[in-house]
Length: 323
Image 1 (cartoon, one colour):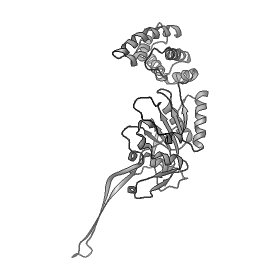
Image 2: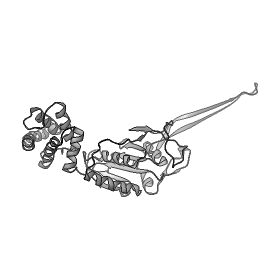
Image 3: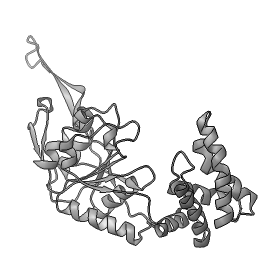
Image 4: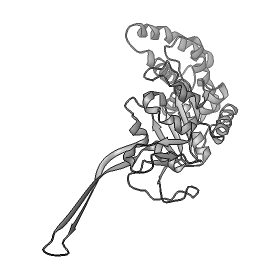
């Protein structure tokens, strides 16, 4: 991942230079990701999303934690082959955090003493406007990746309505330039979010959802999870298959308060290999790692402690069955 500059003096259809300008948000040039897992399922999702983006429509990946939303969003940004601006949703974000605002002042003072008996002084103080990520992406034709956008308050995201539909960004008079910015034709937008019932999010306004093409994501299929676990966990395919089968069976059992995701597979694979253990039911270290990872989110007091107590024998049985 490489930072690249924003140069307002370059024509829109020219390549971005390799220098930074002052007071510009950080822009990323996403380098190719070596070893990215691309199974038929992931390839299908990618091809559909790319088609919508090239047709001029923003894409929205919606799904629970652990379904690869952010990874897929960044993968799409790489496929588009243009600079990327990354934005994370947050309760504290306001409109100015998206489009920009006044940050500091510029002071200019002129002292004229050409005639020694006459002293003339002029002083000018102006507020400095700094463009933020959305404005920079719209102006320069970058890809905007807005991760967990529904964690931001809906009123902060209202500025995106005209950007996505009319391809026009409305800016405050304080910017001291045009009040309206025509969105660059290369501008693309990719959004991600958790389902509405997920804690800490806001209900997205219908007008914004209507401007997106939403692709609902769920847990990957078995072959995709095996491929990811093998690559990220640095284990053999046979070992990855055993770990994935345990996790998938545990999901179906309904015994855990929080559904284990592909992250659990990767953690188990990495730590088991790191400790020199084998993915076998008879390996004490492997069993300990599985218990630590798969019961960690139920290791709480009260009813959760009871859930953990009930989950332990289920996990032990699954390890014996698949490993």
